[in-house]
Length: 458
Image 1: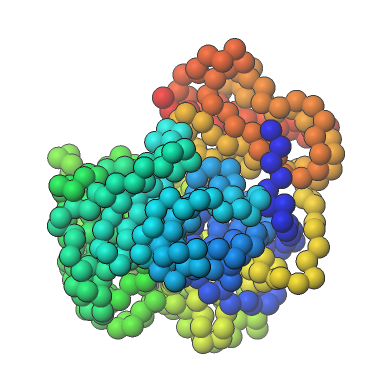
Image 2: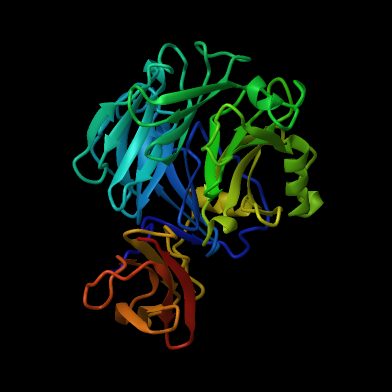
């Protein structure tokens, strides 16, 4: 199967982590998201993708995206888009956007103000949890790529003028919501943990004072209570849940807060988080300086306006993506923080400028053979494998087990220059299900063989 990603415009950035010029990116609400090896956002009715592994940036224009408030990755080139209340397509529409063809699917629901959403992979069927901020309700959309069915799942304990603004999901039965209770405004925000997906789900409400006093002993001058809706969640091991919150600071410096819950053996106690400030404003700004020539980065301040998790091959390889807004100098940066090594890299400046350039754009071709890490990984029941070819060539893409024994062949033959995608559903050449375990994906061309590990979990 050949999928030339983003046929509309494809740009190759030679130095993706070098800042040559800065272009402001006006992101809003939950419009920063991640997919397989990619960071995406909408800006000026353009859907922009930064490919971290390949060093490419691309965008697909669509007027309907002008009021996008939320993005969630589905599969391949398809993304779920939620609109804010001033959406040109109608208030609060939720629809599928195909970035390959720049087409918008029919509206699935007509909510009043979607500022974030969460996509849940139910083993090949994709559901979505969507908060309607204007009506203080939460909805479940089942099977967004099939025949969508919408139902309200708002727990009674969070209804009632709370101004829900952000949401992330760890599974279909656990999600975290940030609101502006009661009725919006500064100084009264809360983090809500919901266990279950029904109207009588168990709910824990935490004020920022609750979070600040937990474990880390944060003072009132160290914990901001005015958060943008930057939330990201990961579970690095079965006993730990980690939530990252981003704010752009009104009462204190901008910061990224890390909130952890540890399973004591009796389950997670969501009333007892262990919290700390992971980065202050000056930490984020120094990270920009450390990754660039100082002469290209003027003195300024860094507001952390959003966070997302860039999944790694294993949970230990996860990276934290931070949208940093230096509004004083009209600059925007995307910092990538490698959690395991506590190191930064930068995908901003020149890469963003080229991705957002709307005039004088010429098509470029991939500069090298590249096999990207499959996504999702681990996976069940299927995973997507993307690779790029700098020239027309003969290709063999196959799966072998950990001992090198042949399992199945996904592609073989002459293929054209560009990006290609194949899906492996965890079966062998005869269509029989393979057991859980580590497998290898091998891309063989005339010049080289590239290999990535895949983890199948039944």
